Image (cartoon, rainbow, N blue to C red; front, side, top):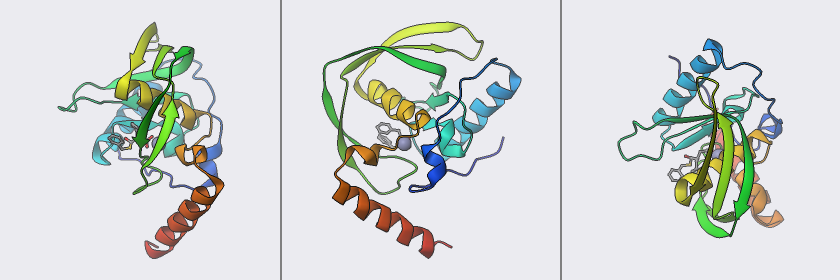
Length: 167
Ligand code: K2U
Ligand code: ZN
């Protein structure tokens, strides 16, 4: 299974709005497998298909210490969002940047699993944050967009400098 290249901010493709998956078939299951391998290799605890330049509503995550509890969410929809919580976030598309972001403390999310079965579950803590972070990616939003314009400008310059140095 290939490790897929991860798009880096401010790549415009990160602002593409993902399309819903029409059928959960073997091609989608292969995409999930490739995304999972890419996420574990990064390493990260979540990854959205947008970040590997595939614009479909698919996210993977694994917050377990043993990296063997993969969760794949297809066509995720937040049904309910409650409370507020602030947590430092990072992003595989914005390497080296960690900033506080305010998100819902607890969410109820509906999605399709790898067999195409509908699942509804609540999530809080790190998994709740991760789901919200990944779902932002599917909507073309990168977490730095919650920061001030000044900070966003500085991060853009830093990422562009980093890209030039690694060419
Ligand atoms: O979207 C991504 O780049 C995946 C993030 C997921 C994530 C972001 C913020 C908060 C939780 C999860 C990467 O895994 S960033 C690396 C990371 C690793 C452990 C904890 C937080 C962030
Ligand atoms: Zn991210």
